[in-house]
Length: 165
Length: 351
Image 1 (cartoon, chains in turn blue, purple):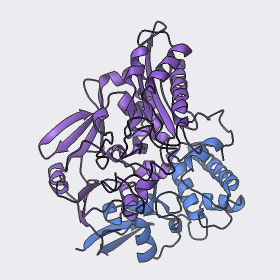
Image 2: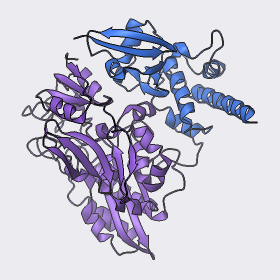
Image 3: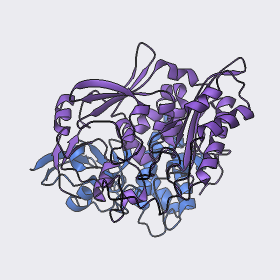
Image 4: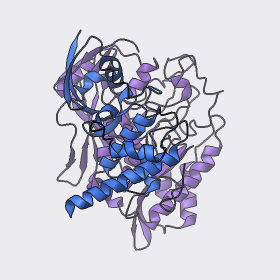
């Protein structure tokens, strides 16, 4: 039986017909929309490489059935920059060498963006490590990742202060 | 993953009818179920998606002082609810010590209760496992079993229940509201999970079609907010299941414990309420000796199921420490590393 669903992906509405309910959000993004920035690492919710934002919250897209998320608003790594202007978290990862091979990086960046929206870590490195523990980096670039998130968080705080001033 | 039919009921009644069929299972977030299906450990014929049912995602304060948590409330939404953290700090801390931020954003309250063991032999379809394939045997008995049960286990199964959330819930007498083929009923959480006995394939006392619609914390559960906590020993600092954990909650008046609540995680096939330990803490001063006595009682029936005798002594020490921390008072803020015995001053390196 075919199932029709529609999603908003990086701001654009997309309609799909699913001939099999087994499709995950991760596979839909990669195989149907060719948005391959979202990575398939473990495919079992353990590594965080597939992290995306669904309705503003970070989740593992490998453990989410697309059919169950009919109507969801999805943000992937392809949707965070404005043209050539990188998202502040992307820029901070480059500035602080927050990666080596780069495979986990889209998931790390999406997770960091989600974490900053959650507002639970602030600029405490211990909290950032705890709140980013769902993203593994087998190159061990954790020190750079924490520095990048700290800088991005600091920039966001400055921007918010300027806005409220 | 085996092919399955997908149905999306619009009412609880429709959901119960659809899930009562043989081979049907409920789908909430799927953070455990999809993992099990990808590994061919669970092979359902039909998924009944309850995530679009209305009214199950609310946190309600009832007139009698109880708190009713809808089964579809996400773990993170509950753990970050300021009023919830103030009233039930041990539950919030347990939630935040489980899984990762991504999983907590997706995983639901009802799903957390019904998640399955992480025993490696249950997950490995080449191994014998009485929980996965009834009557096939148990390879964990002679395998890598240092993390397995020390209480309530049987010769057919030594798996543990992995939930953190359930540990303080069972200590606080949480009630599970269930909608089933014969209407609504409720049971205390302590009666939801089963010990393995000869039938470890059945994790819970639920019948086919039974849907958990809410978890309720009774009015008395608020009375422990000033002296409560959850402590969890893991193999790594974060994003790991408990080797051993404990939830401790006390009511202290005039220097004496009026009531104590204690439950252990990671030690049995269910969250383990330690009532005999609670009994010796009533009307005594919160002293180290009293906590030691409670710990000995809590683990009185414990025995190793393999290379895990260490867990018994570890559990005793975690009980003493959890009770000591609870007696000292619930901290004003959740610690930077929730439930970690290694949480120190903020900013310390833990990578």
